[in-house]
Amino acid sequence: MEQFFSIAIDGPSGAGKSTVAKAAAKALNFVYLDTGAIYRTVAWHITLMGIGPKDTDHVPMLLDDCNIRIDFQEDGQHMILNGMDITGEIRTPEIAACASQVSAQPAVREFLLDLQRDLAKSHNIIMDGRDIGTVVLPDASLKIYLTATPEARAKRRYDEYIAKGQKTTFEEVLKDQEKRDYDDSHRAIAPLKQAGDAVVVDTTDMGLQESIDYCVALMRERLGL
Ligand code: DC
Image (tube, rainbow, N blue to C red; front, side, top):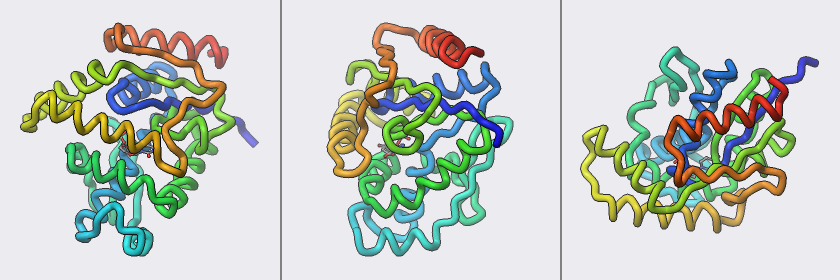
């Protein structure tokens, strides 16, 4: 069987995971999978159905009607839910908070596990998320734990929301982020945690391009590319 490379990038929100992973995938000609977008898609689905993310009775039932397809297009990963492209809809603070809460449900994590693993079996892939190196791909060719201070991360998210015309304040983004960091790293199942064999990259004092260059160099060196 053909062997593929897999690179896991985990870390808290706003550390630059998706930007670094996307750029690195382009540089190495790998597929980039944003796993957060999959959890956001589930969050969108249950919100649409009027069910809360902590409802452990109804969320598992709704998963039966949650047909998720991932379409890798020229401009990146598109999330197709029951035939509808909702890629643009899931990038809001509300969906981020809902995704964080719903992702704590074991049924949701179980439901998404094979989807993620199957992609790694058939592509050279870079995945970013919270539990990629610890749970989804414990045998990844390389694991990176990307992090930065809470303030630096919140500033990046805030700039992103403002650029998209969304109304929010820095304080609000920081507060939401603190809650999400806490919840993501304290949930019982697959919490955000650095894998023992992950390389830690702190991007607090790095510009975007610097973080990308550093990680791509690390990947090339470790994978012999
Ligand atoms: O990376 P993101 O902000 O798009 O992720 C949204 C939420 O989804 C995040 O707060 C926690 C959850 N998530 C997860 O539990 N496991 C992953 N591999 C990716 C995201």
